[in-house]
Image 1 (cartoon, rainbow, N blue to C red):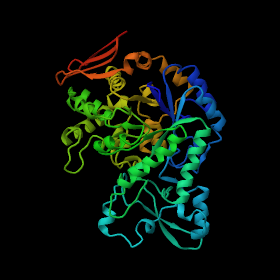
Image 2 (spheres, rainbow, N blue to C red):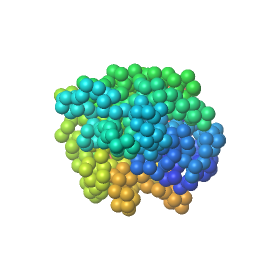
Image 3 (spheres, rainbow, N blue to C red):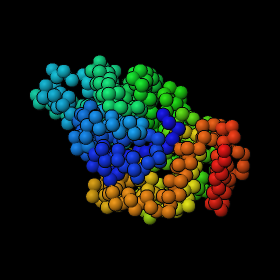
Image 4 (cartoon, rainbow, N blue to C red):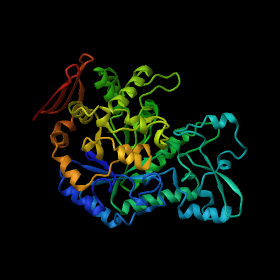
Length: 476
């Protein structure tokens, strides 16, 4: 992966109707701003119940967007990352529909994870209560087959997302077929979506257990054999992220978004500095994504302390809700059909109270800490919460999934704030200092000073949190 900023976006929400139009956008309006492109699910269909993360056919690009030849052409312009959805398929998939019709006689019967697959001798109350849940209730859905029998199917996320048995030979073949398709389509990197939930074992949390690490390692080897790098997406206790980073090419720095908010809200960089001393350096750094702002990534786990004290973390969450005028409350927790227990749904710009100076400082911190920066398409334009879309869909995460028009993009790219952001992005992409050594300069808690040194190439960030003044220096 190039040491340059990546864009993460949906095709149809960035003013584009097709992969071809996205290619044109990269060659023109966005030229030079990004060294990589993470395209959020573009498989058939892109408009399912979970915005493409419930594919009916993972090997088929939604025909409304184009085909694999179009993606191959785009890959010649920019390095492409795609999602490998390892945990589940759509209930509308050909495979699951065949299982509904034929039951255990279906050639796909063993592809799907059932209650008795994991608990052949039944489960105790303790077994069920120990299962780690990203959403309320137990991870099972009652399904009626064509012969009238009822099965309890494992559904970690929604009843439309049917968990697969990744250790079964059919499950293994299914995932390998997607890797083959990606290789032919010019995909240079994959993100393993929901990989932490892929392995279920009685008597465990069924989340990031030892067998999960082994599964991730084996799948990573298969991808790398095809020249494809691997990014693992895990929202979890921060030490879990550190452990995963040892086994794959890249992990997300999901702790950074809240640590930056903590730094700016409380005028105190202490927690951020402590994290930077131990954080994985093979990370993709983010402030915002297509999901919410993760809280679990900085929180404690049981008696184990997190990166931010619980009382301070609660105040940070409250401040986000205040800064957004209460709109984030309408999209978070039990509101708006939102089932993500550990995230706040809000654009990062609104989380900062639409303070342009604070937003530019936040991006500068992201660009200067170790890792490959990834910028979400809404964040590229310092986007505001889309309350109209939220009201229309009643899906919490849609507050930060605006559909931009071509005219909106032209207007946004001419904003003074966005011009300042673009200038900072070009420096991050092209200055040789960022290929050198990272130095966290020892300062007081209300000052953040970062310096990159590569021989005579130097890039330095100095932030006085008390006055909220930032200075950047670049020399060669």
